[in-house]
Image: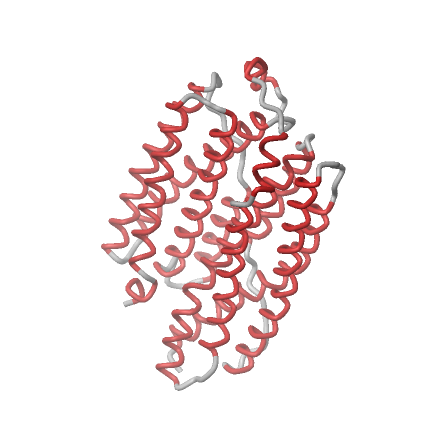
Length: 353
């Protein structure tokens, strides 16, 4: 058996096993968070129920994913074991931080839906390199069945993400937006909100500060990724990502100015978890950080970034912010989509080759 392929595949499999195992409990808690309902409006209640149903379905589906991963361990003659995935810990910390500052129950489903999509993106990004390595392992060593099981898990993760996307476009979300207060007269007080979320404007500012942290952190990340890349083309791609992200930071500063606030940031623990995972990989791999794992981290970060812009634009359009604010966010979202697609087209197989 080729040690490089086998070891890389086993490492990825262990991280997936940790993610899926921990997800069962995390999704159980999320389902409870979503179900807390002090609202009287039927549309708002229906939105919660629909989201709760999807979260519970994902939790139940995750149990079958664990069974398949255990079968894969058996096929490659390895005992099931885990490798810590700090990104999930960060996602849980972000959700708890939100629960500590939200004072308007009507806005909870908006956040929980967005958080659920970001969680799916983390899983999606983690499965992609493992699936590619499974294909190579089968070809090199005549191992059978591991690709089918990994692929089935990955396909179900994508289906769940698509399902959440469909919910995001339903009338129940519009109901939540329409019934939440929008008061232009009070916008000058946003800087003194103390971080609590009572209105759509508070929600927007909270997420904007979060995204400002994400963009500034991603800019530094891609500079480091470009330096460490052993694949020249991938290094050039990371450099381009860094340069564009610096422009994103500048535009976000303009957005802050457009709504009358000084640029400030709020820590994002999910992204910090991704960075921690990269540090752990460096500490446990003799050859240093691999291009394969760095591409996974890059894609997970970019996909999370893209979800942030989607949420901000939804809120900005509902609130009725000036067109120049919306335009700056739209330009950033378009560039994030372009650069993420460019990274996806490179493919993990090309990086390994």
